[in-house]
Length: 338
Image 1 (cartoon, rainbow, N blue to C red):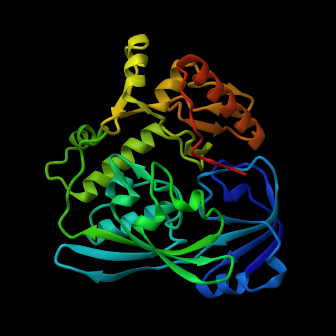
Image 2: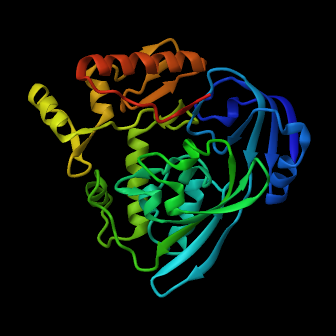
C-alpha cells in the first residue's frame, strides 16, 4: 500500500478539477484491502473509492481517505462450447480490457469500446453504449466489505442492474470495494450494429466483412468525433441520463414539439434524448468562464481549463431547471457529485 497526505486529485479525475484528499491510499491487492479494513485508524474516517475518476465531479476537497483501486490482471477462468468466462481485476483500464477481448476474439464488449474508466466501475454504473450494457455480458463480481473485510460474490440479480444503476450506487454505496469482474462472452459473435451510426461508419471505413474488431473501430471513430478527449478538454462524458417518461407523456410532448427525439423503452415507457432537450434550451456550445457545454454534444459539460467543480455543478443545475421549465421533464445527473 502507498499512503499519501493532502494529495491533489486534479490528475485523478477526468474533469481536471483541482481538489485534494486528506489521505490517498493506493491498493494493489486483496490483501491490501483487507489490511485497510482491519486497521482501526481508518474505521471512523470517511472514504471514497476511486477508479479512473471518469464519472466524478469534485465540488470541494475530500476530508477523508480516497482509496485508489490499482488491482491488475486478466485471465480466462472457464469456457464452454459457446462461451468464455473472463475475469478482469477492478483496476484494469476498461478500454484495455475491451482490446484484450478483441485480440482473443471474445465477443460481446466491442460496442463498449473507448468508454473511459476502470473495469471495477463498469458494473457499478452498468455502463452502456450502442445497444449494449454491462448486464448483457456480466457473470459475477467479487467484492470485499469495508465493514468487516468479508469477501462476497455478487450475481447479476444481486447487482440489481438498471439504467446506469446498480446496487453499488444506492444501497451499498461505498460499502464494498470491487476486486474483480467476470464476464460471460461469446466464442461465436452475435453482431450488434443496428444502433446509432455503426453501420454507416463501417461503410465509410470500407469494411467488407463484419467483425468485432471492425465494430470496435467504428465505435471508437464515432465516439472520437462526438466526444471531447479528457486529455485535451476536461469532461466526464455524458453528464445527464436520458430521461424515461410514460408513452402518454411522450405523445403529449410530441404534440407540442414534433421533432422531439425518443426511443421505445418498454410497452409503456419512452426514453428521451437528453442531449436534444438540452440543445433545444439553447445550451449547446454555451460557455461562461472555463465552464461550458460542448459544442458538438450538449450532454457533455466541460472544463476548458480552470473551472471549479462548483461552477460546473451550478451550470448543470441551470440546465436541469431550464429543461424542467420548457418540457416539464426532470433530468438526472449521471455523474457522481462529491
